[in-house]
Amino acid sequence: MAVNLFFRSFGGGGGGVAPVVVLHGLLGSSRNWMTAGAELASDRRVYALDLRNHGDSPHTPGHSYPLMVEDVIAWMEARKIGRADFLGHSMGGKTAMRLAVDFPERVRRLVVVDIAPRENPPYNQRAFAAMNALPFSRIRSRKEAEGFLEERIPSWAFRQFLLTNFVRDGSGGFTWKVNLPVLTDNLRQLGKSPLEENERFEGPALFLRGGQSDFVRDEDFALIKHHFPAYRLETLEGCGHNPHMEQRGLFNAGVRAFLDAAG
Image 1 (cartoon, helix red, strand yellow):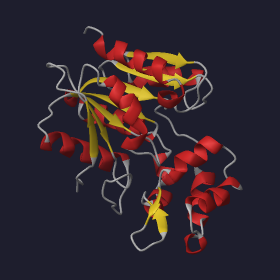
Image 2: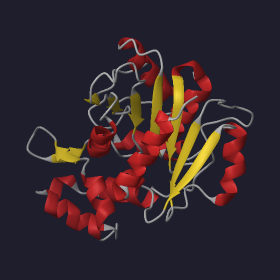
Image 3: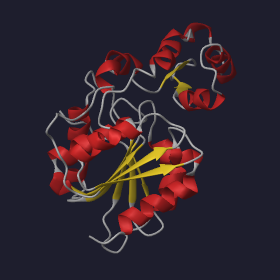
């Protein structure tokens, strides 16, 4: 059963231009897209959604690509959005791929950010282990939480990203905003390809990858073309898995040029 997704909206109506629906990555939320989304919304409406079990959207016992697609389609139906451009990052990119294959009539153009339609190694296992091990009963501040994570997560930037989920629990303590138990249980499934071998989306698709990231490799090009025959691929040098943050100007320019292209 679909859940009612929380979302943030940027920009105006766009004068008939298709809206952009942004789907964030694992452990992220619409908050991660507030700056890039607002900049993309200079001439169109941009909606950044919180996927189920993330951000301010409901927690549920199930978490899969078909379920997330069901949620997004229900969100579109509720707002009478017939067709949109989709921009998905990482887990959100896999969700957008699944949606494009299942509902091609809903997708005008597809942008997939730093993810390919294949199985990924469980790169988040260390982060999930650290988050699950955080001793909330002894944590009195965000600083203490960061100190605990620092021993397990060397990257300062990644720790700050994880701590966007560190919130008050309503009783004076702290908790994780994401539905950590359900996401942990489904981590392996989320790493798999969202597509079956012969599934295709024939519409325009842009794959944007970070030049310092290995989530989209050169050997993935044939697989991407197999599923998305009308694809283009662009590499943004000088950034890793989060080009919308690390090279936001170049990222937004590339996305806007693709969305504005004729045809």
